Image (tube, helix red, strand yellow):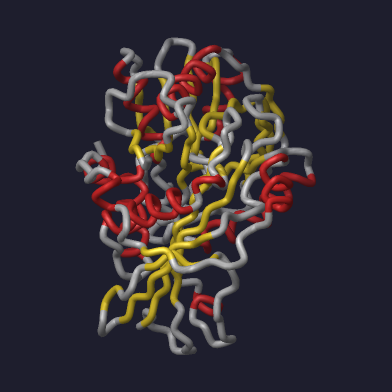
Length: 375
């Protein structure tokens, strides 16, 4: 078990004990009934936003200041604000689920809170206490409860983030940092839902390199993935897969998801964490579930050429991606410079998708304590 997974096992206080840390301010311009109905009747992913946002400011001399829920809206950002020049920023992503009994839940918020702080350390940003991080989610979801969809598969996606908000042009860690948590009522990440996606392997561009920020959830990593993602789109693919930046040989991850390879002999492999890969909470959950079912799950370096050879020879029976937004998605096609292969799909991908989502939505028992009740 990784250090991050160990930290994520630490129990959290009940939501009622965390509620109220982020006091709600008055809000006189919430979305109208008409605007609310328009948004909730046509849910996309990350396009519209709920009424409130959590807000706090940290200063080098005073630490974390007042924690509030403010009306969602524009921020006071001057041209000299540090994040605009040096990208000192980290973020997280998690979902609030409305179950059949109308209760509201989060999935593995302690993992997100601890990964947030791991990312913060790498970017020389202040850590936010785990209970304050989770408390911001609790208060935001409770205050914006109407924005948690009731449709099957739809959620209120939460985006906690913090950035260097001090105005300066010198290259040093900011003495002022702003934390925010915003909510976006969202449908499926992929428009096709649970159906195979096509992946383009980028051999000319890399998401991260040794000693870099690959294991941190920071905006620069995603900015680096955008041009190769555009190239993938132009070639007719839906996502891009990156190779390691040191040897250009091994599979790392997709632009925003981890990957698993299922072999016909029964074992499953996922790329080993090298410091260049973002460790995902869904990835960790899948590893645990498979291991408990007696599956031989291995973390190892997976060479692209070996992967292609094994697909062609029939040694590989399935290939899938996973992450908070898409949960579990089968990969049906893998292409790159000089190659295109169709990837078989099979029952294990659907099985693990159903196991994860059944736990998240309360249709199956949560024996790991991953689900956290908000209300």
